[in-house]
Image (tube, rainbow, N blue to C red; front, side):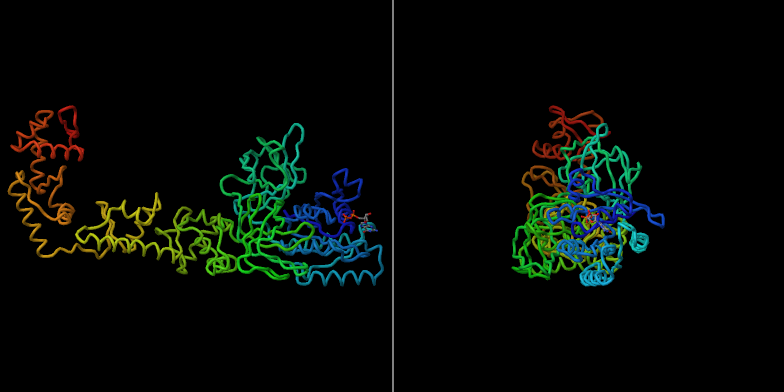
Length: 621
Ligand code: GDP
């Protein structure tokens, strides 16, 4: 399904043409009827000679209603630029064309109406003027067709031309993220709230939960219609009327965006490529207050120029647009900027998650350039730079592409060496880094470990927990990153929970080795000395890490084999007696209260025993 929109100066015959083509009078409001003027949007539809059904949005041509025109022209596939043969190009012909150009509407037909009112010469002149006007716009080279809505001349040819133009128009993509920019909201008694708009980027189904994004109001789809026909499912590129339950008409107005919950959010500031029309009287200075229009949304805004102080007519620049009322936008959306009485320019949304940038910051400008114009994989990498690591689903949202397309692009970026996936395969959930980001992350991990090894040469490694916190890694990401670092051979993440550099070896001098051996020998000889032998703290930690000694509580250290033997004796005793007191253990081992106490506390910590009152019982049989 396709949507066709009219454009052109007031009284040039738009509504009459739509009526002649469709049999539907698009001037639906009585006020408009009386004044003979389309002030709001008109809607009609027709079946073309090929059997293709199209929707028509008829927009007002009066300069005072440009904002209504703007609300209607978003999301159209084909524009009919209507110019009356007797008056030829007029101010709103120019302004509407400029808006179509800014919104990058690529297909159009120039319809020269009121053919019956002029002779060949005047018609020829009008055609020439229109042709010249279209030059240097997205509609350059569009067909020109003279018609008369009064006599019917040229109408069959126009229908065929519409068919041909739509043959070349790609159907709207379904990227699984439906957006319906609301252009009308009203209530029908017995049904409740109805909103209408052009559906893009996804489908809507009967019964589906939806969200009115700007106000954050949830609702459910109770009915769907297109061209007065009931639907189970509406596809992208369709004019749709949605009957909502759970939403009152007070909750919704033109400018709202209806979508599926969970992915779209309001943005207050976004980065954009901004273009100033060539025929505006003066340049646009930094921070200029303007009116912002995108889809059916309209709000006051300011344009922060990022790469200059004044944007000259006909020129373009990088800018950050700050909206007075936040609006839901996605990357690639087109918008128009107006002053109180004239269209100034417009642009393309490049990044909706924009932070406040410093002006004239080279790295920011380069990133924006790549985001806007780089190869598809370069754009993906730039989107990743906005926050990494990120998974495919998040990136799909950032780039407004489908998850399947993003997965494919991610694979290409990895093959090109521009991105890195943590794990073997790229799936929706797998984490991606830019090559640079990963090099940075892995470099930080190596530096952290190297610094740790330098500070504690006698330790095998840093605890996993400590490393995570030093690298600022949290949650599930942390483990994936450590696993990938280990898999890529950068680090060794051992089972005991210590992490070290692959080539780290504990450096013990002959002297230190001798001290350690003497210490262990002393402990072996007398497990319960009155005065405990001493050793440097670092060497003691190393002995414990090596498993040669066991550190009980209160600074009590035992040689590993003696400890195991002692532990066995206590456990055997308790198994026989069912329990043991401190005095029992002291007598059993023929040692002091201090040692018995330290050993029992250690057994409690190891979850071998448990304290019940003054006694210990075994935790496992
Ligand atoms: P809009 O403001 O562009 O929608 O213009 P309308 O459709 O309201 O037309 C303005 C006036 O021009 C009306 O009085 C129409 O009857 C008249 N008109 C429109 N098309 C033709 C045409 O092809 N021939 C003649 N003679 N008059 C036309």
